[in-house]
Amino acid sequence: MNTPLLPHLTEKSVALAQAGNTYVFKVDKALNKTRIRELVEAEYGVEVVGLRTLSVKGKRARSIRIGDVRSGRRHSGKRKDFKKALVTLKDGDKIPVFTDFAKQEGQAA
Image 1 (cartoon, rainbow, N blue to C red):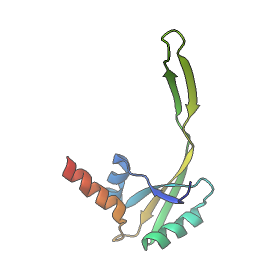
Image 2 (image 1 turned 90 degrees about the horizontal axis):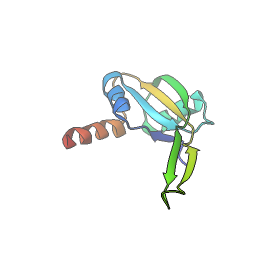
Image 3 (image 1 turned 90 degrees about the vertical axis):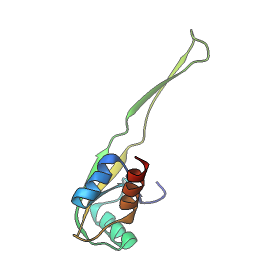
């Protein structure tokens, strides 16, 4: 992973950001909680109150490439494993990436 912090923008993560002031990031698997806390505070200028991490195993993927109906080849593989960090901020602190994304989604609907 080139960048150590990537916002993980899903419906659930945006809802967590709006309701509980908890933000979700995809982080490098080698980073520990202390380093993640330092990176979030430095990059966004906020104060981290709580931090939880979890390792997510990549989903199994299976596809069939059909060249000839009788001799279609099956390819199986797996998506990459990654680490997720759930960062809770001090009351009043916000990360604009998540709030901007929620506003754009609200306008599109």
